[in-house]
Length: 368
Ligand SMILES: *Cc1c(COP(=O)(O)O)cnc(C)c1O
Image (cartoon, rainbow, N blue to C red; front, top):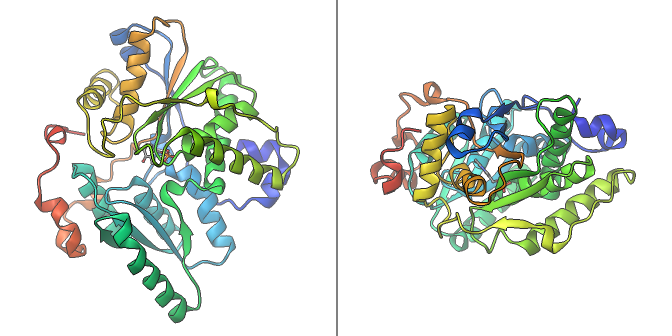
């Protein structure tokens, strides 16, 4: 049973949940990276291994969101993201596993090899995918599609917001904070001073912040912004924190009433590079270093940028005795066999551009 349910039985009784992943995820001492950058206290929590078919950070959220969809009797789920969205893919993979049809509304993004792979796997999983240039142009066609579905099937699909970062989805990472606490107690890792995590739609960082506090760890969350500041900022962070906590308390009022001050929200701004999914030199150098030193695969959109901030923290701040944990949010399961031989011409034609146009320059020699 997952740690928050063990400790708060009312949560177990009342919150929709369906187990999809493999938990607890392992912790690794980054011995070799540490040698390179001069610290013996670096660790990695590998949510890349959170699932058998497809890992990464979206599964913890989907256990609650798809659990809710099942409880509500949904037959279809609809979600949104950018073309290479790991979230849309994870939704497609696990919806299929539960016998639900999935529909993804996807927006244009910079091209990269992982975009191609993710699109092909979504297709193999039977997802219905739609492409739009911009958010604005997606609204009306999506609304019309939803109304058509309602008329034809008598109900709307279950809707999952961007990144699965609703208060309900965010509970997945509240639980992850408790999971880390158990691993600290059992001696797998010293209590971290800091956890570094990517900040996109924020459910991961916000959930961890609540979970670590409620579990009684001193660990502080450092969020590395990889999305536009319009979506990822302090005000929205605090709002999601409060909404998620309120939702948990509405199920079980004995849950700790943890608090957050604005000054406590530590968002690193300098690693984003100006564009979502636009790879950076620094981020790709971090991807290479992790591959070489530890054999761990990171990506250019999220975890490479976050690792760049992590390395900067260790190298630059003279805090060599700090215990710092990198929370890996990027899928580590190799699915190349599943998509081998799948022809991209089977995808709707607006997606062909990602296969026919070049990938962005910094992705060209990226073997990940
Ligand atoms: C979605 C995603 C994130 C960001 O998580 P949020 O909860 O949206 O902030 C980080 N890393 C990877 C690999 C992701 O796919």
